[in-house]
Every structure is written in C-alpha cells, then in structure tokens.
Length: 345
Ligand code: KG4
Ligand code: ZN
View 1 (cartoon, helix red, strand yellow):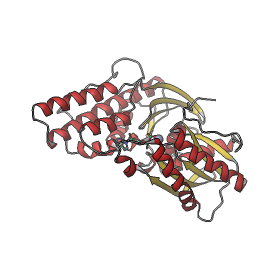
View 2 (cartoon, helix red, strand yellow):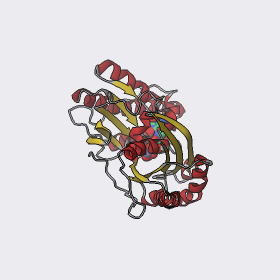
View 3 (cartoon, helix red, strand yellow):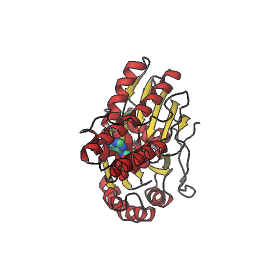
View 4 (spheres, protein in one colour):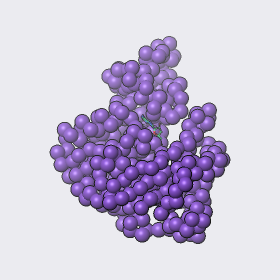
C-alpha cells in the first residue's frame, strides 16, 4: 500500500509518500516547505499569512512528493491546529481524493507525532505488538501531553499542560533573551556553551503525583531574572548562554521526571517522545538514560531527528493504521477540526 500524507496544521506545508509492504515502512519522499523564516519576522505564526503560504505551496509540494506515482490512499491532518492552515490541506486532500478516486483518511496531528516513532530505522515493524502499552510524551509549540497508548488507536490522556506548552516556553523565553524564532533550536545552540547549574530555576510541578505540567511560571522567572540582570548591567552573552543551559535543563528535568513516573506507574513496554521539542538532543539523551536506569520494563524509542517537527511522513504512517481498519472519511463530509482531541476507541 502506498499512502500520500498531507500536513498543513501550522506553518509547514508538507507531503510525503510512504510504502508499506509486509508491515515494513519505506519512505519514498518527504517534502517540507517551512515558513519559519517568514514568521521569524513577526516572532510567531500569523494565521492568515500561514494560510496564504500554504495555498502557494500545497500543489508544488504534493507534486514533488508524488512524482509520477499515484497513491492508494490519501491521509491528511484534519486537526488540531490553526483553522486557516488546516483548511488548505483538508480541501486539497478532498479534491485529490475525488479526482484520483482514492480513499481519504483524516489523521489527528498529535497521533501523527506519535507515529513518527515508527519510522525510527524500522525498529518497530507495523506488526510488532510488543510495543504496547506505551507511554508517549508529546512536546511541541502547542502541546505538552503524556499519553498512554494501549494499542493502535487506543489512547488515554494522562496529563497535559495547564498553561504554556514546553515549546511555547522555549519560544517565549528565547524572545525575552533576544534570540530568534523558533526558540527551541536557538536555545539549544546557546545552551551547548552554557552551564546548566548557573541559575537555579524552578522545576514546576515536578514534586507530587500529578502528570500535569505548567510552564508559564518558568517563563516569568526568566523574565524577572533578565530584567534584574539588565538593571544591574550584568546581562551579557556569557550570562545568556548560562540562562539558556539552566532553562533547558529545568524543562528537561520536568519532562523526563513526569514521563518516567508515568512509565513506571503503567509498567509500559515502550517509552516514546514526539513533537518539535523531541528534536532536542539534550532531551533525547536525558530521556534515554532515565528510561534505561529507572524503567526496567521499557525500551526507549524516539523519532528520527528530521521527523520531530511537523512533516507529512508521520501523517502517512498514522494514516496507514487507519486505512488497514478501513477507517475512511468521505470527501463530502470531512471538515477541518481545529480543536480535535485525541481520544481512544
Ligand atoms: O511540532 P512542531 O513543529 O509544531 C507544533 O505542532 O507546534 O513544534 C514546534 C516547536 C517550537 O516551539 C520549537 O521551538 C520547538 O518545537 N523545537 C525545539 C527544538 N526544535 C524545535 N525545542 C527544543 N529544542 C529543539 N531542538
Ligand atoms: Zn506538531
């Protein structure tokens, strides 16, 4: 089966062609047109600007991903995300489904981030059932969630952020520190030169049994710290890299601590991560070490680096698991669902 994935939920227009033969995945193309440079000027995504660029990019990106091939199935992100952005991908996929007379699958964006793990050097084959139950940490610009996955399509949300998402915390503090957008990669680069112990920043909600998160207080702590250092004329590049290292470590300690706590509680077989923040090499390294040391029942898997931020390969993989269950949407009735929550069967 070949699946064309289409993704346009935020500021990346993406299309990918995936072949699945005997449960093995092979990615035939993976095209991403990023608008990061356009949105860097405004320090964040302007929905209407994103939608206009999706319209310009959609057909060229899909054409490039397909070449002369015709897919068996189309899979598109139908939500959650920005409504103006989602509409472009959904409408394009509906039109293609009608023109090519191929079935259409609606994929939840978060589910896509989960399934990016399945492209990790084919460690997991499509038929491998030894992965469940699994705990997945989803960390992106809009989401911070711990999900229990008991089988394909079977999800329970165990905890989420009460306010800012982890990626949002990176983006907002990067702006306070005078670094560019997106903030996560900029902070990661600076953090490599800094000392994680220079500033004692809070680890919000790490104590206790709750699997919820809160990152807005951490952002405020950095704001007050920078304001004080500037007032004292002590803010310079050395201090900035130390703040980046300390902040990144604080966020990672919370994310890893809660994920390990959930993995132990549910005695899971697998721990996975997903979403843009999962591209953090420091997060990947700390998570790998902690799972190995503290969760004897589980193995740790992460998506290939390139498939952490938004892409359509992950949408195609998730789409495959829906297609095998014939969980199709009709092009007449499918609509974008900006607040679509990932729920179990
Ligand atoms: O999944 P994604 O591409 O889009 C959303 O669905 O939000 O995630 C984007 C987020 C941004 O907040 C960005 O700062 C963060 O992922 N990010 C990172 C890194 N690369 C991207 N955060 C920390 N470290 C990174 N290396
Ligand atoms: Zn995303």
